Amino acid sequence: MDFIAAVKRQLARHAMAPRGARILAAVSGGPDSMAMLLALCSLRRAMGFELGAAYVDHGLRRRAKAELAFVKREARRFGIAFHAALVDVKGAARRERSSVEAAARRLRYEALASIARAHGYDRIATAHTANDQAETVLMHVIAGTGLDGLAGILPVRRLGCHGQTRLPVRDGHGQGRFASLSVAPSPPCPVGDSNSLGLQPPASSLQPVLIVRPLLSVTRRDVEEFLRAKKIPSVTDETNLDPKFERNKVRRTLIPLVEKEFNPAVVSALARLAENARQDAEAIESTVAKAFEHAVTQKPDRAMVNRKRLNSLPPAARARVLDRTLRHLAPRARFDRIHIDSLAERIACGTGTKHLHLPGRIVAKVDYESATIARDFPCGSLTPHASRLMPPVVVPGSGVYDVPWADVTFRFGRQGRGALYSARIDRALADYPFVIRAFRPGDRIAPPFSRHVRKLKKIFIDQKIPRDERARLPLLCSADTVLWIPGVTEAPGSKAKAALRVAVTKLAAKGV
Image (cartoon, rainbow, N blue to C red; front, side, top):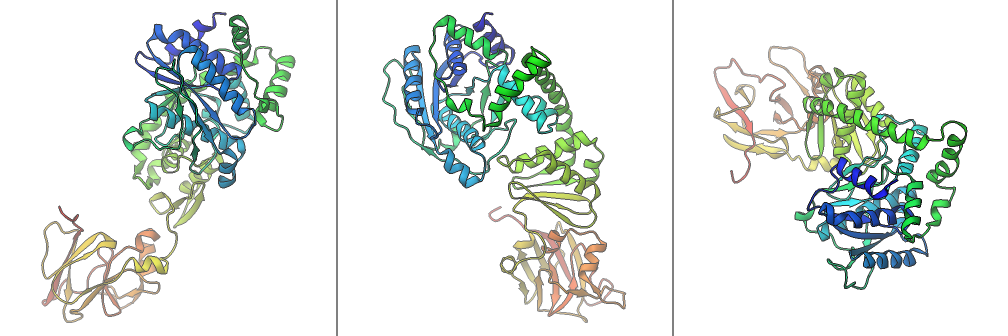
């Protein structure tokens, strides 16, 4: 097999290395990454891309310093820039209560992204092979995956603005911290060595970075034969032999068993399965994108889901719309299928107002016609602290009164242009001063032309007003008597001869 030709085909097929690209190769010193580094070095001039190498020390093994020195030496021999980073995996795992594997994966990608942005690389190359793909697919199947999980490791993936990536296996919630690792300069390196990175790149440089996998079409056996033929040295990471890690058990026990008893070419078969699943998932996703726009109204800190439109979708499309919604709000959180299914079921069947707590401090609130999905959304009635943030507005006489917590302006004694709501208050029943305040438990109102006093809570329920919206409705009161709730109740005095005119408009932005 022509190894370099196979890597070139993979680069070209997925547009991994267009002319002018700047690629940062993630190199651990192991066989896979060394084979990738040599192949990329062989192709960089002919394909017209620039290349650098990076090593990430996870702070877990004593041999890491020797491996760093080895990778640095090889980078110098190839005449390319070298960068290094040290990350505190154990500390992150403790803080996040995640596995060491999950914390290492997340911090590794964050460190590589920071190096890339600080030094102008637009893509990061990792040395995942077809064997890694087969292992990943099997691990996902064992966990009960869906179509995206069957797609396994994607050939090209986009990193977010803070280094997080939507990896096939997701975990970790906290922010990683980098410690600098000093590396002496190497004269042959065109860019120079880096002591990456305790520095956060400027906001303007927080642009998406691509993750590319040039070796995804070759097997580990192809890698070993290539290194032997080229006499390229490599190092062995002893953690790849530790059976306590799930991937190592799949690699060393499950795949050899399947190769022996069922299919000697199982690695290639699983790689084909992943490619077919990826193409199907991409086709479905293009349809889901339209459904998402139709069913979801997105804001930076929350999303409003139209229940009727979402429930009209097929179950698979419904799940993908919710998955996309959750990951927009909490990109670091791990959402499993059970979370998506629970949310879909709650939205489909919910009656009244219900809450569902999800990973990443996400709360989903299902109301009558919509579902609000938000970070740290307050549930239930207002706390004393929240009430202090919604102070009553005293109205001593005619004029204009802003109510910031309701995002409206009341205009007394005039109609007002562009009014959202307007009313006439019978001055025989009530007159200045008035008070505009928030709802309180136990509030009642005597609707016009009715002999009965009704609880506001009952009115809200009858009109299907979500609980969180009730808390921010402005109530026009005279002393302790509720007179009018704009948009909810009718004012007492619509037919009175001596009536006070009140208009409610949207609060104007200051300085506009």
